Length: 405
Image (cartoon, rainbow, N blue to C red; front, top):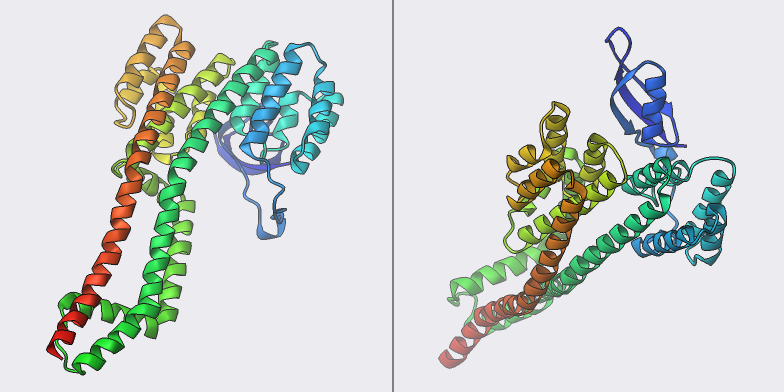
């Protein structure tokens, strides 16, 4: 069972800190409230090195597995199949060992009287906060079948966007890797031999173009100090990964990436689409606005947006409208707070947000299709330019020295 650390106020208004074990974050909050403590912050406690479980390679649960499970469970529950029987059937049919084991455990807990939401919360690596909160809300309202349908649609939409973004990024990443490998190959193996040829033809005092001298110096440094180059690459990679794991570093990176031409607008549209669909699903399921904003902020996938949603939650907590807070953020397009304001006035916030999500998902599709058609020629020109630069810096002096001879 997961362990949570908390900060709360006691009856006297004094701040108290501590740890407690609970099935989920919401259960931990309820436990603190029952102890006459007012929770300020409740977070999952990080495990020590001795508590970390080694991963089983190839045994992870993919998003596709969750989508299929949710859609099938929704269909079976809507058809009147008992919940325990439905979970057992899906567990037997699952080809993923981790998913199969988790569903067996969930079935046992449900059969023992635990709610489905609390049973899912015992497997946080498989089921997200959004998933768990929506199931709990569905059980509380007696509309679990409707909530599962909403979840299935949301999971399918999120999975679709994830696959499209991944597909669009695969080609440029492959080309970039090939380009980098080609550069290192030329610097380590080709340029040194060509440098020897140039000095054999023109002698040690041969006057070479500036670009050729730069290329030879770079090659000499990389060959002579290859260990520094390799160490520098590893230091950069690990330093970057360490940076984005820190709260400030991740926020800075997520803020900067939103300003990158071509890529930034797509990431912003994906974040807005996720916000709208997740917020709509949770709100429609009956989850409180403040809890919805907390869960949605974690689901957006960008800390800059998450920070704005935290500010929005504070604004709502103080009695304001969420649309007012988002209109001042500068991250959300003007259409989002405007339509949200209409939803707040008419009481149709959930439906309005679904329309926003549909609109921005279509925008993401169009943007990805557009950038995919541009990436290929840009990367080809980039690779050609790099190879051409090396060719000019090498072949030019060879031709000139050959003529002099």
